[in-house]
Image (cartoon, rainbow, N blue to C red; front, side, top):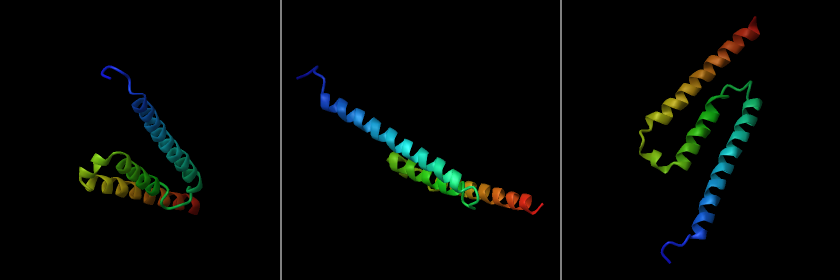
Length: 95
């Protein structure tokens, strides 16, 4: 009937919000775990950045229309940061 509340739509919306929250929470837990375990890794920033870009493209399908240069530039910037961190840590270890 017009004007009535659709309870299934409310349940669906609440479920969608909870699933989205769970997905982001699990990603944050994995990112924290990978950050602790990957301190000595060359790709300690690149891999979480790639996962973030993948998560954004999965959760926001309209991002597929964005140029591929945006995620590539993010990944290249993360790789450059990893190389700088790796070379400075090697210099500090050599002292």
